[in-house]
Image (cartoon, rainbow, N blue to C red; front, side, top):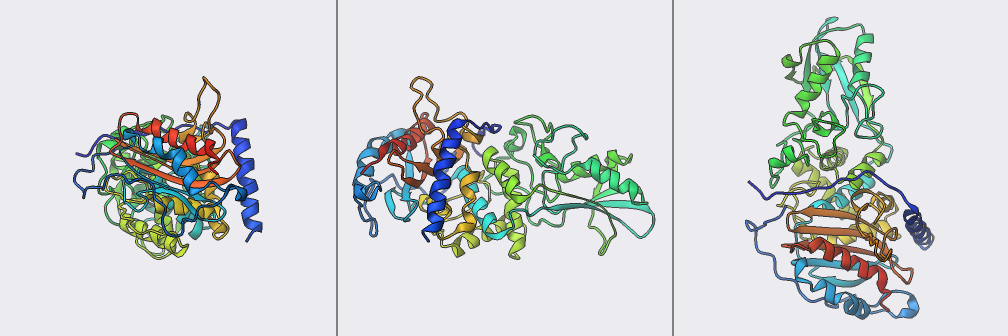
Length: 461
């Protein structure tokens, strides 16, 4: 059994600080456009942290250019970066506009990234798919007769909900079983049984390095091409226990709605060319990506990565999705050297990424060369304002901190903390950063936040 893990998902809260940050990022993005969880003992040991160094191409810049200098950043961040609570630290800071690396520590060492892996999944989806793309979930006839079985055919939307009409679903804009039931009733077919077609996805339903207890903990469910409420047993509960049979559960809910025996639901492939009786659609991709990033939703991440795989003719499996995501990022000139992934959510303790790769993905979004990825900046949680950062970077004693000025994807497994995003520093410069901490101490997350806060206050000319 793997180590225990913890997650925290928070509903979105938007405050005035968020508006300040968005204004800064929008201004920067406009300029760019016009200008052109965790014991890893079973794995190979990770080298101890190295002191920040100046590498070829890292040319110190002067404060007259308005960019923090290599020396200034090294001096400002050195003490915090050396805190033993950070354990094995990999870090990188880049000027968003120029793409110049300004600071690094072990940025080429592969480490367990936790949920910051979702940054790559989101970036690949933006590169590959239409932002308005939706997924169809269908019910088709199981045979030519007006009476007979019907087949629920999944295409990878885990947000299909069994919540009753008029009640809020967990996911915004989620399709409902009740709509499928209504359409089947109008189709002229009299169903006698329900079958579920899960053939769109292939391979195992659980990834290597996942702890099966995470299903009961509410972090994940077996990844199947048809699910309801992403496998949540209690859809309105934040940390609801997940089902071990999500596809069958979806079929059972459809059967109950049709007045059939839910215990008789089976898995079966739909006949070729079967008549469609009902169809519902997911919310647009951009909305699903927002929910994936803000709540750090593992099931959504795995399913969206399979959308990317399908779009470039890769198998809709864990391996196929990883291949698709890394392939798309590589074509966008994101350096994926050292990437060794087994999932697309970051839940696995077998995942490895470098700070260089993670920072490179965010820098591609913030810089001038990959406009398709730019919406990634809007998907990142806001410090002190939204998602998994809603309750971080808040200091009620001083009312000071980067709340509203920093956006980042978080990652948290046992003794593993990561933070990857973008910040506007005290000189008004937009910087991208990636920090990964493995074998962290008990105060590791707070020290990582202190490192990001120091970057925000720096200026560091």
